[in-house]
Length: 214
Length: 268
Image (cartoon, rainbow over all chains, first blue to last red; front, side):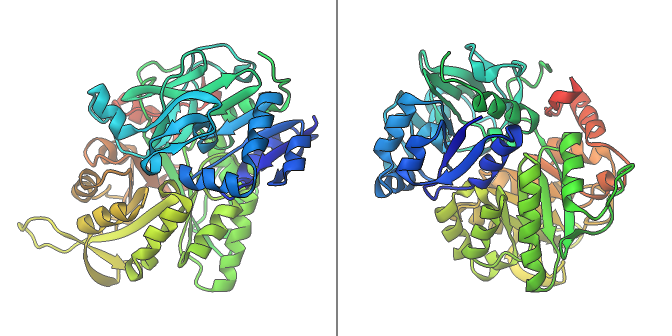
């Protein structure tokens, strides 16, 4: 119950995530918005995103959303999705190197660089596009009712390294990477829950009733 | 939980639906389906059946009816929460944006990419490579006993473009296509299986995923597309639509032959 703000900063398809939230909680008031007051007022916040990190950061700057996100990511149930995970990190190698929001310590790398430095052969194509199992390496209310090792839908070329103390879901594509990270009231996924059929909807339903504590 | 596939990206099975003026054509025959032409109903069935993605191919001729497709995509994306690709008649970045905003995850560009390759670069820069699929219709043009060569065709395989299909796929991925949907016009509709040599030649030449399409008549063809054609995903229409095989049967068959596939939660 309550209101959920889906942050609209011009990066990708927000309709699907909003519809999925409405689908799992018909009492939720879901609003797609870039108005700081609306975001600050909402009970829960979703930070989605697709595309390139530089555009993402500059749009957040232009719309004066940077401080708003830093604020809500520390104060209310907060869900980052895809680029909305990567932007939380300190630094991304994408676009020649871009500083992120720094809410999670760590770095975003390209799969090919990762394969190279890990000394592994590429297991397949990049972007990684499709369904990969997620190992739940730490308990979390958002995993509630979802069997360990469920498949989720991923589409990405850059990945978040494993984060000590913050990675709660791990997937493997040649190397282990962060499929989901969490800290206090913040949860973020590399996969798209809004496109992951039953498992994804279960995670969103858990988010819609999450109080932000572990 | 299936153990063997736990550490890998699974190969995708993608049912493809032809849409004309907002209705699914070439009939889908699910048991007890209320409306065989309703895209939402059919998408819901494939969602429940464990399909990994759905592709809508707009075969509408008129631009008025294209608007209808936007509404179809909106409706489907409001009710079915799985990856959705839309192709057919995409001519501009505005068309791409309209489909993405309606709820499509990926947009297929075919003829417009040939006419204006920069469109692919612009769309990939604007919206990200992950949502730009370049669709290629290829036909074998080399004679018997000659080294195989395939050419890109348009207009349902009637119009040659002079472009080498393998080179074209490589060029499109350089321009930012995040995926290639490769259809063999020689095999499309024949039920003789994918053109495996074509699929392998393209798949091995590009760094991005390749969806094999055209010619599926049985489940072994799906396995061959992955293991011999090196495809990352297989697209099929009639074998699923007419109820010959279910998606689950296809996955059982593929898994038994060593292809990693996803099992929907329900089936466990």
